[in-house]
Length: 187
Ligand SMILES: [Zn+2]
Image 1 (cartoon, rainbow, N blue to C red):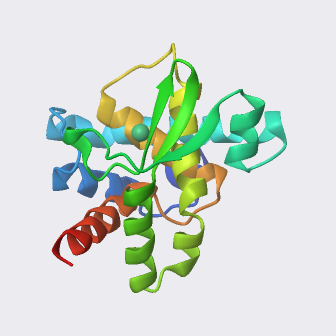
Image 2 (image 1 turned 60 degrees about the vertical axis):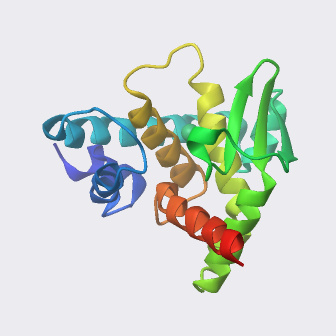
């Protein structure tokens, strides 16, 4: 396959696939996908997210995830309630009835502080947009979800990375959110 047709070419993320595989390996996302299927499925998920981001950019003529959400009738709000127990470090969630994106303010704040501590102010500044973009993918895929949940998460991250022209996949933020929460818990 020529470079331009791989996720690397589409996303300009030279290490996207390796990053995804390491993420799956880390166990932060529970999945039963056998090791030998992961690379192929990850590549497909990256492509899927990247392609959808491309068509959304063309359709809405903007890369602003909140503007796109508004155009789609998806509300964006913030709660200080904690995420579901099984996903305590979740930054945001998508609910479909009515369509809405809810940011977990405490987790977002903990993640933002941790990013700033690591010298990643630019990413900290874009955190809200990144979260909204990721959840927008779940809205857009609704009704035609295919494949394992872990792969749909990867596609959502690829979608956010492409829409916002990031040079990393937002699954990298998981560790900052978890570290930020740990720091707050022990403060
Ligand atoms: Zn997701």
